[in-house]
Image (cartoon, rainbow, N blue to C red):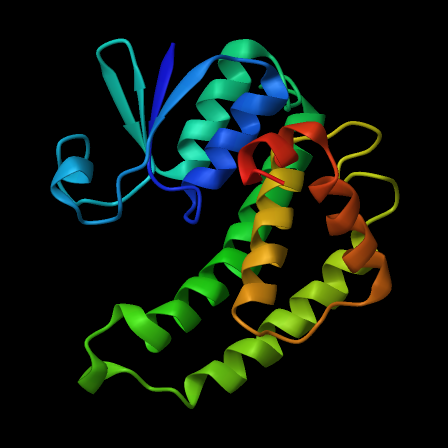
Length: 194
């Protein structure tokens, strides 16, 4: 059984959701970031971490990719053009969604107060809005990569939820409905407790 270290109100949510979608058993250790408990698994104190036997893996995207490859679920096969397209979408989401949201979080509550630049958040919101419009244009079916949920969908939905919580501008109806349909999935509901 896997052990996932991290709270559900963090990037650990992505890993928990992926495991639920895959139907793989896990135990959650709801450690907060930079806590002593988190540092037992990752010296930096960052979450999530995943225990697979004696192996400790870190970084939500690396963990999700590992699990998807290991179980051949939520992913296109490695070494295929479909996987290259999926990886391109995943990296784009990390650059254009996750990184922007993380920069906003740093300037809201992560950095020491004297280093925060609240004015930068308006530029980040502008960037996110432009990226959300691009993603909406790219969304052609029920999921980003076609007719089945894949890792980019989990990542995109998590970031869209994060943006909503951070009071970023609302996306267009197409993206709003896309994220809503993902939040209605039983696996998402199981992790979110709704």
